[in-house]
Length: 230
Image (cartoon, rainbow, N blue to C red):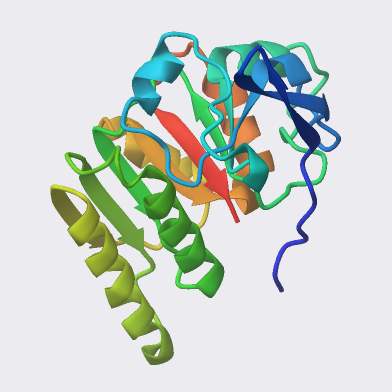
């Protein structure tokens, strides 16, 4: 069954002194404080996007008339907020279709880890990521993790995903693992020094628990970012 999709925010755009600015009424479905979440209005993120985030930049307004295409949040601020809660909780009270990017010390697309689970939703997620970040991943190394067994009916889709990522990055690896928990993907990403994990929002609550537990611990890798979507 497909996950429910909700609008993440109500927004409107104004022109002030010739500069397009977005004003967000309220992040109606986010659990985290709205001041640590930035909406971006870009169908295709500019090549300078990682540098923009790493310099403390906020929301980008490439195509404001289209609505938000990505939310970003600085992971240390999110985790500091999480640690003030009685127990770990998901970032969104009702996850929506707009992707969320959590970045730590720096946002980098140097080494990508894609989680493909054999479902059409997973394929759409990866297609949308590539479309959004196409100008940022041309020099990236990519690894795709897929289930050991894929039904024959899904094998063509799997090959299309592999070809898409191969054509969009400089180097692509494809491996089969029966990972069933987000902690497995996180451990692999940390061990292999991946800088961006692309996965589903279905793992959002479990990811919060993993990050809550390991934050600032011996295994923590502060160059790892997370892209979560449906």
